Length: 123
Image 1 (cartoon, one colour):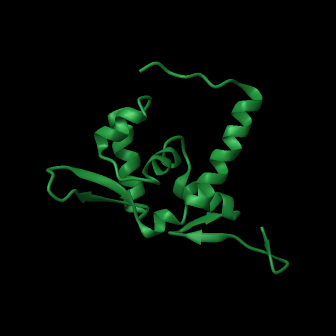
Image 2 (cartoon, rainbow, N blue to C red; image 1 turned 90 degrees about the vertical axis):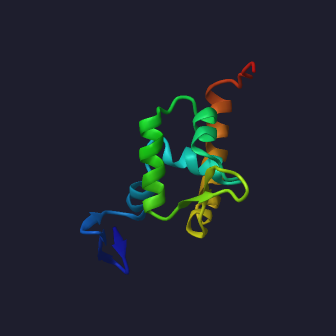
């Protein structure tokens, strides 16, 4: 990438990144991380709640992705007061991703409407 008319890379934890998109994908890339962040955007949720609203993810993958998001300080697991339950919630750093998540969701909605159809699921 060019910065101030000079070739440059970002280096994080000994790994070189060719552009800022590469850095973004390093932290929140993959199939599930942004989906998890999306569902934590407006409320904290337990592991079981996340599993229920994202039925295509298996327990092991859900656990791995939550641990990764926690290790990168995007989410935190906190005990719910008065209840014997722990819930994941966004951190201040996690909230910085909301504008990007909203833009990606808007683009995805546009593409889904253009190339597919909305199907309501029976409960």
